[in-house]
Every structure is written in structure tokens, then in C-alpha cells.
Length: 217
Image (cartoon, rainbow, N blue to C red; front, side, top):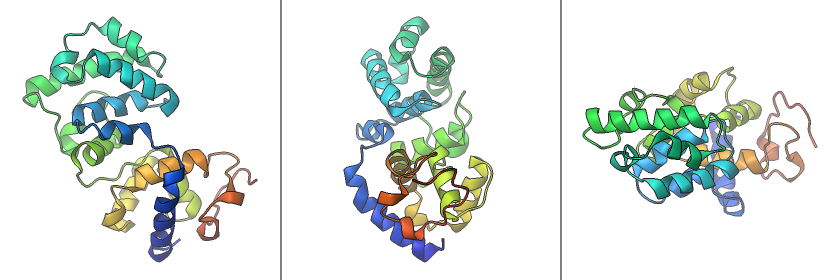
């Protein structure tokens, strides 16, 4: 897939996305609070939206700022976010992040990749998504969906998500950087699934190279 084809694909996916559920991270971002985006991203790691969404809602009812979160006992945070994956570790990491934000960043979530990645438990995926959704800054969030689909399309040929991000930063037109994650997450959950993708109803099937497909319907 070349960039001309990619532009056609992205345009079509954007039109089709109105028929798919909005990713929970995007819904959280609509509240306009970077801290909620960061906390939501932390909860989402290895956890489905169906579990993360209600957990995030319960958590934010307890506290919606770093300062308020630090006043919540860790066991209450654990109870609120259960059953997200690794909920005990995430509760501890969240409090560590809140402490760092208050002590080192004057109580405000940092807005650069390097500063965000200084926070405990925050990797490139979470940092990029926080920049894009929390601050409307340029970034490319590569999760399992973006990595899998870009390789399946034949747009990249990579083994790991970090490598995919590096390649996309070199090849992906910048006007697609912010939106690629939300579009491919929705597309990946509804059409281009890891196993048994729905190629028969895929709106951009003719552009796909179908690299390494395990099974095609």
C-alpha cells in the first residue's frame, strides 16, 4: 500500500467510523482533562474497552485530579478499577504518577513525550495517546491494532510496535498522525480483527495486501 492508497483508505474509514462504537479513550478525551486521558490510558493496558470504560467511570467518581487522587487509599482505587488487568499494580502506578505530577510538574500533566515517559508505568503508547487526545499535539499512538493492521495492509513491515511507530514517523503523512489510532482501533475491533477478519464486508478490502492473515472468512 502506498501513500495515495492510504489516503483513500483513511478517507473511507473516517466515513465508515460513524457506524462503529467510539473508543473509550476518545470518549474520555471529550471531557477536556489531560489527567483523565492519562489515567484512562493506564487502565486500558491489556484490558478491553468493555471493562476499562466502567472502571474509569468508577475511578473518576472517586477523584478526577492528581491532587484528589492522592487522598484516596490505594485499596479504594483497586476496588474501583477491578477487574482491569493488573489492577493492583495499576493502582500503585497511578498514585506514583499523581505524586510525580504534583511534586515535579506543578500539579499539571506534562505534555511532552519525554516528560510523560518519566512517569511510572507510562510507555510510548500511553505517552503518545495522552499527547494526542489530552493536548491535541502531534503524536502517533501505535497499539496492537495499529501495528497489526499497518502490517496486514503492507504499509509497513515491522516486528514490534515501537518499530512500527518509527517507520510511521518517517512515512505517514502528518495530517494522519493524530487520527490513525482512533480509526484503526475502531476498524480493528469491528472489521479487521486479529483472527477471522471480516474481509467480506471490509470497505477497503481492495487496497489490502492481506499480509500474514491466519484465516479469511
